[in-house]
Image 1 (cartoon, rainbow, N blue to C red):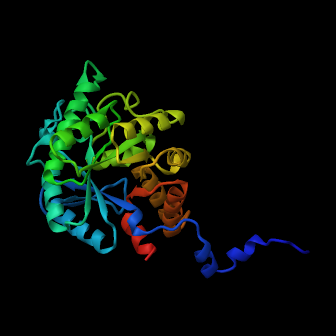
Image 2 (image 1 turned 90 degrees about the horizontal axis):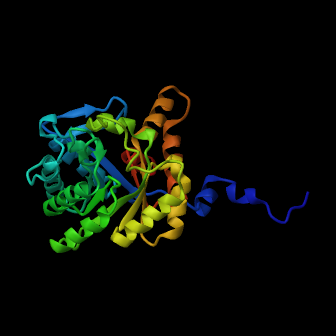
Image 3 (image 1 turned 180 degrees about the vertical axis):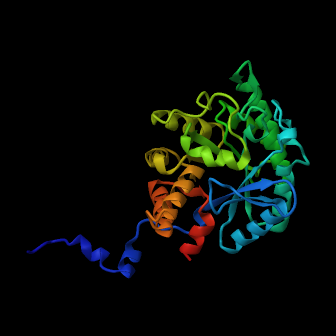
Length: 324
C-alpha cells in the first residue's frame, strides 16, 4: 500500500504531538472564581462542588497568593451577603465598606499585580434572589441598570481592574461605561457576560452564594438556550456599548456559540466553565467513570479550541498544576 500522505506520522509520539499541537493551555488562560464570606478563619466546602470552598477574606488572601505563585493572573470575585443585608434595592452592593469592596482593597494590597474582576449583579444582595429589582412580580430593567451603575462605580473606587456585569439587563454596558468615564475611571475595564444563557448548569453556584431565585426563574433576562443568532446580536451590542471583553456562559454545552462569537468580534472572548460542568466531572470521577485529571485538561482545551481567549473555571488551580 503506497500513500502520498500518512497523517499518523504527526501523531507518532508525545514529542511530535507536542510540536504540532494547535491548542495549548497555559495558566495565562485562566480566571479563578473566588467565593468570599464574612468572618475570620472561615473555609466552607460547597457540598455540590467538592473540593471548592467559600472562604473568609483572610483565607481568600492566602488563596490569591497561591494562585499568583502558580502563574494565574486573574480572579473573579463573588461574595456571600448575609440575609439581614438583603433587600429589593440591592443597596449593600455599593456600600463602600461592604464585603466586596473590602475584598477588592485587600487583594490589591496583598498581590498588586493580580487582575481583580468583580461580579456585578444584584442576586447576592436581593431578598428575591434575582439579578434585578422586582416590581409587581417583574424584574424591571432600567431601575436595575441604575443600581448596577452604582455597584460598578463602587467597585472601581475600591480598586477593581474589571467589572463583570452578569445580569443580562438591556443597556447596562453603555450605562456602566458612561459612569466609569464620568467618574474618571478610564482604566477600569468591562468584561460583559454578553451571551449568558438561562441554564440548569448554574445550580451548584447558587448553593455557594445562597442566591437561588425566590420565585419563578431567570428566563426573562437570561437567554434561551435554543438561540444562536441572538447571542451574536447581544455580543455585538455590548461591544458597541463599550465592553472590553465579552463572555459566553456556560462553556462546554455552548462551544458552538463560543466559536460563532469568536468569528465575528475583535475583542477578547471569555467563557465560563460553570459550576454544574465542574460538578459533573467531579461526580463522574468519584464514581470511577472517568479520569478526573484527563477530563479537566480535555474540557478546558476544548473550550480554548472553540475560541475562548480566557476561561473562568473552578479547575484553574488544578489545571495549572497539571500543565506544569
